[in-house]
Image (cartoon, rainbow, N blue to C red):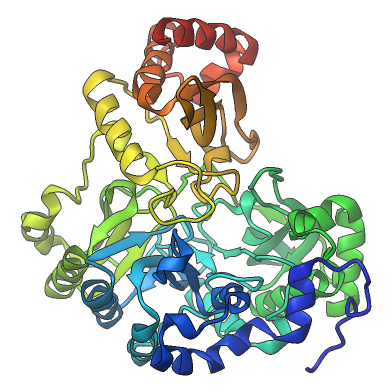
Length: 538
């Protein structure tokens, strides 16, 4: 190794850290061909965890031998060829199923070890990789899905993201981090990457240097969700575009060398930042990078959490990007293939995935928009989705995930459809559902967050949900939502949320958002309303 593992002699390392000292996670890539020849039964159970570094998790139940694969899509930008390869993998090996994640990645299910080498070859043939999409390593980099075409970007970040992504790919110097590690790089002024919730985020800023206004980035560190969420904190530094890679390496080095490795649940970067504080973290950054200018002027404006529905003009005159809803992020492989065909027929073949689990098709000439929108696939994947379906986000849930406590994906889709029939509002209300405290569904930032739990009843343990209200990442108001006391049986979730929304509709001020409503009436008042709703439903 090119670096010294400063933690190697710590007697209090957790068990996973001890395993990683014996075998680096990336070394699993050397074993997969053999396991594919010999079959799933040949894989020792003590090797299962290492598959995460290859972007693979065993589905529930693990013993059945089916894998979920997550594929990196930096900034969410797919070419025609890449989209068709992904569709082919889903069709040939994944039971025609393709999911878009809240980090712009694509997930497959039902993959078998015998198929993984061929899948790797297909991905590699078009410049894609699943390596590092899971595990204690840099995950897929979230970026502006409109990069290069965005009228609201300070600069084009496509090449910056590529440079950083390719530096860390299969890089043994950074393949043994304390836990998962998440990064966003975007110059969109509407915070489309949800910069507050990543371990490290580069956000658009300007600074006058030597009499000239320079476009670059502010650096935020220490964000993250799960059971103990933290908002990222801003360091007092300004990063030029050409310094992003160096800064990313420096922050990752700090995390690698000083991040906690004794307890897995306290190993994320957010805990180190919280304990050190931003001044100490900045000092360590400067040690590695040299002196940096102080921060400039943030260019973040009102928040858009990744929604681009409809037809919008690009920076390039005469061209448009079109935003579509993919209900809870789930596509068939056939639909993905058709989207790629349509994008190539009417545009340049690109498809872009969003952290809202939706898609954008760019580069559509003015005179081709109507013809594109008349394609049959856009009856389900639409530019004008029903209101609650439009802003519904869900994790994978118990259907495939070993960590989940409840079913989520189909339930969120059905709850949203129910609310679309029962409630009419003139403002969006964002609903996020997650099946466990790890919060892949990012419930903390939702207007209404729905977190799956198990609830003891006379009939035994049953699926239920906790409800959280009032999350936002608006620049001057950013805060996570807060829990309403009392659990809801899964079967009652739709009606309970409906009653909350009807109360909001009846008592809100003109044009008031759900977040502003919660702030105005207060959690205590809303708790009383919620208690009455639960009593009626019960």
